[in-house]
Image 1: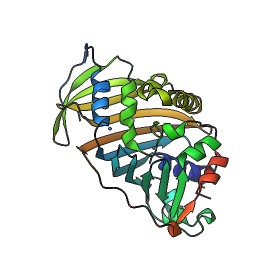
Image 2: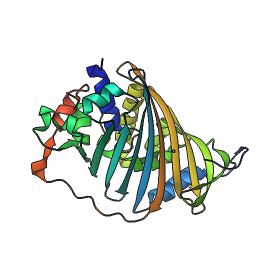
Image 3: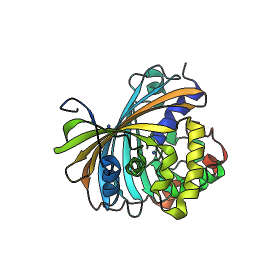
Image 4: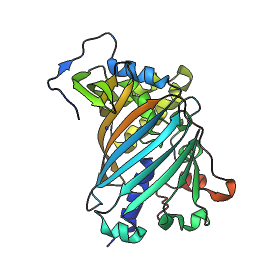
Length: 301
């Protein structure tokens, strides 16, 4: 029997998620004054924008089988805007497929600064909170402050952010112990594969001084909520010191359930991206207050 808790977990994981073929062998420690991963993250973050593709693998003790997903999108780093689509394959969980009326679960997302717009599948869009409107709107900064996560207005780039492009900022907080794994061709680019570990405590130092106090408070809240202090990352960097692929696997505790997430993010293109078209106000239901006032709120109903 499909429980309300399982539907909530699927819905929350999907939304958060929107929010990495190596050739050669051997391994050697990179001995350099400049951390190649942090250097590439800095250079990549200076780009005006990027296109990216994502592959996701989700496991949870509340789910009978893993959930896989694919996504793609375009982001502008300068003004923190972008659009992203994520499709989850739920064929391995027939109970959820039956509830949704389909074996695929698609979410379209538009990011506009601190505001996220989500277009949900019809089965979830029937939720009374949406008032028959196809789009949900959430002001992340307002909701996070209400839920006890101060500083998210300056930390939309946490590992659970709805903007996958912001993993690049986190790469600047690698521990300094970087391993060169080998080489590989990624999306037609010749790259070097590195393995590193992001220390969450070092993330605030990747931000301007004026933002660090707020960021540090948010990192502390994330560490306490997700019970993690570091994130292992594999990174593929091309000859121009641009990140072309990031891969991570993390395990966390969510409402007493063990959840594992594997993400692979490819960046095949850097450069200016078109501004996303926001949905008309008449098509949007603002859920900021509901999300911020209850950590257990779910669009699953």
